[in-house]
Picture 1 (cartoon, rainbow, N blue to C red):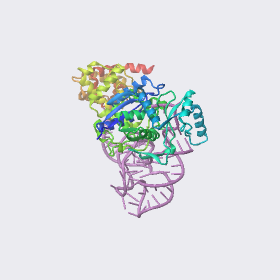
Picture 2 (picture 1 turned 180 degrees about the vertical axis):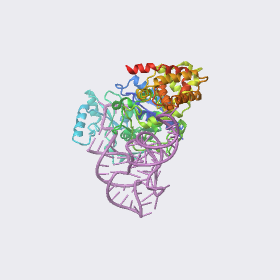
Picture 3 (picture 1 turned 90 degrees about the vertical axis):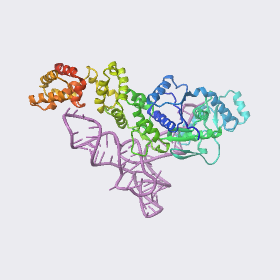
Picture 4 (picture 1 turned 90 degrees about the horizontal axis):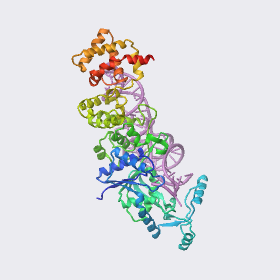
Length: 496
RNA sequence: GGCCCCAUCGUCUAGUGGCCUAGGACGUCGGCCUCUCACGCCGAAAACAGGGGUUCGAGUCCCCUUGGGGUCACCA
């Protein structure tokens, strides 16, 4: 059995978006599943739109996602001579010809046909030019493109799609398409095929937006005398209006970079993306890398386009709720050391990192992360919602401040009083602090919840959080007493 | 408009003629737990686009209609 070779060929005209990431992921999975190779090929033949930053952005995105490749990145422009040679060979073998029609007149014809709601196809004006006619025009300096000569015959071009089944298209519905520009540069349809032949690609896994390219490319494979690879056209990812998502019209919400910046766990994003148009046939939705590689197959890719159900301006669900749900799942179930590594990178970035977290405070750090991670959705939450655990300059959410603190004016005295009790404790831990709190509540004849919720707000800035006495233990007596004692400042600020 | 593809809960989906009074997940709502919130657990509402066939029997096969998407570049 020959080696499985797949490729991911992005055009570097922007950042990596989730559609591209999903394509890369499926190719990667297929390669890993079959012990094959994933080739990364940058399709930069559109020099005007290709940029260095874009190439780097795509590489960074793939790396962040954990999708590694085995060969490349190759750059398509470096193989331009291969493409031209192939085009020349096609001319020699009669599979292509030079066309001298001016782009402007063709564009005008197309436009006219479109508005007249007619079929728009190249009329084949130069298809049967004699050698003399070609020579004359070249001598006259008329620029020409190279067109593929689509066989004029009855019947259809067909191929077996791994996802869609048999796809057929009649020869007469395919126009003679351009494969080389008048400036001598090859076009995608040709370059792509030539590169795939050279790279010995066995399976082409790409979006359904390439379907009409495929029939034409099959013709190219045949004309070039190369074996036709297996095609698998995956369904597209659509936006809320059911439009194909694109970086141009959707901006950051579809950029892989956005998810990195917002504190997503790379594999969680992969896990979410693979579920868009693929399922294992069981109820399993959460997969480790190895599990997913094991479970993956082309046959279980669906035919139906899926909607990327992103939300905007929602503090909790800033993207597809299911993506958030999967991310939070990983956040609270992954080994805490792995979470810690991601939090470290994030803290470093935010200036919240303390080297002791890797040293003498490591145990405390891990314990704290483990305590608070349950209600977080992203890594970023550790520096925002969880800031009070790592710094003293945390914000206090006005909502609980009103509800749990100001609503009980006496807390202004009670909280410092509680701080005194804590300070006087022989040992300060979960049990002793709870006992002291309940004791004080009893003495004051109030519900313990008043003290508990009040101090939660003051100590963590949050309306909700882990069990309060676990929090106290993690925060430590020193910080607890200081924050509870210094409560006057809070009231002073409120009275302003 | 031509060509190609597709059609199950709000969203992601299971379903390959009888196991479907259509299953799961997310989201939503209710309950339990509780110092709060989350987790967890329990429960609820929520879908086969429409119409014809075929068949003893259709979400599942066929046709039509409707709807949606893709594509029609000297972009990739």
